[in-house]
Image (cartoon, one colour):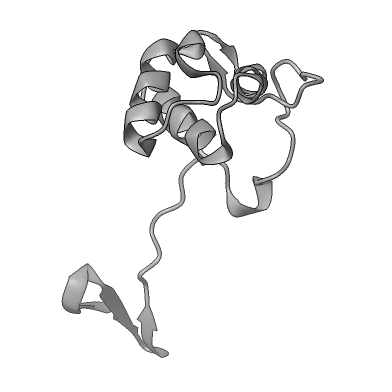
Length: 116
């Protein structure tokens, strides 16, 4: 005869004639494809378009790599470019992201107001 013993934190231990066994495993169900598992990180996706440029971030103003090059040409330093990138990730338009980065860093880019 098998009995169940309730342990702390909702764990259940089944007592069988062979002795107690730990049954903390969850029931199996089909795995979602919404998230990548640890073994799938770094792999190319099996579906969808394969892009030659590596699938970088895309914002309303264009691909991040092109925006970064534009900012470098305008005289923005690396730390300011990272601030702009963070602002774009938060959903701000590029012009506003530039203003925020200039205010947060306390410095305008080398080329001054022409790029703001």
